Image (cartoon, rainbow, N blue to C red; front, side, top):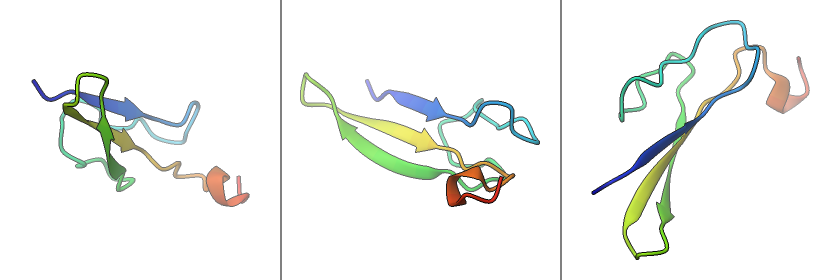
Length: 58
């Protein structure tokens, strides 16, 4: 079974869409593959803040 996990910024200007396994959120989340302990591949969707805090602009 493939697993998906969303990482979203806290207190951002918008609510991020974590209802799907696709990167369909307006912030354009980055999708990363993660090898799990059992050797299966999981997916990490890292959402970007819309206030730009990861670039030091927030």
